[in-house]
Image (tube, rainbow, N blue to C red; front, side):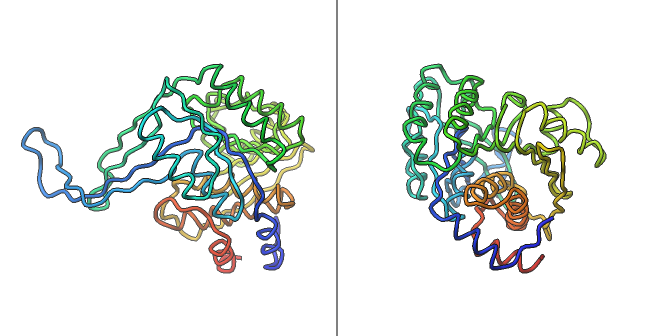
Length: 330
């Protein structure tokens, strides 16, 4: 689809530097507890995990921000947290990673989303979710929109990152898209099922194959099924572009003019798919605001996604590693 030269890749990465993107959506903290299982509890037939280490990192929409910063851009995170100790932890991690936490609104009606994973002998024992998933109130919607409105001239693009945790309500979605279009700001979407068809008039809509199938309520088993689905989504959403990610089958790009292209996967081997979608939407958006064509942005996102799925754990893409990966697989 696109044949990069190394000079062109470096040119795009250079143009990404200091471009600012707002990420609006469901912010989370991923907590990890590592330990060893040496015995079974006498109280119940469950393993006793003796903790050896703990760590926290950003997840959900905040992980998209990590990828933007890793690629050389700037990011302002916009979302909600609770009035609890976990919110201070989240904001501390955000600022330590070079992101702007000014758009994180404290919502007293909910708790900060924290997902705790207990891992023993490299096995995932259990995950504990602390969260509220009800929709944010109109008052909180207004705080978010007011913040975005005040800073709209400072940003180059917006990512709407939906994890079905209640931040992206119908009203907020419509207001943010309207504001972005009024100010001619690029706006991209990583959707979930609940508001699948509410993201009207955006620059780019990026569902994966499962989300597309659920959104359209039909199975997509063949290449022609995917072509029909992508073509339908462009029309229904009035989007400039729809990019359907298809795991080992790569990505399929659909344009408003009715044309489509397929981007084969560049993954050499898959060690961990966690966070790959966040890497793709961050790379796509940052490349586009830096002046890359949609074809270049899609191809670059494909390389970035191919790199991160080959690494164990959730890692952000960085230009040096993506370039190194490109040299291996070009």
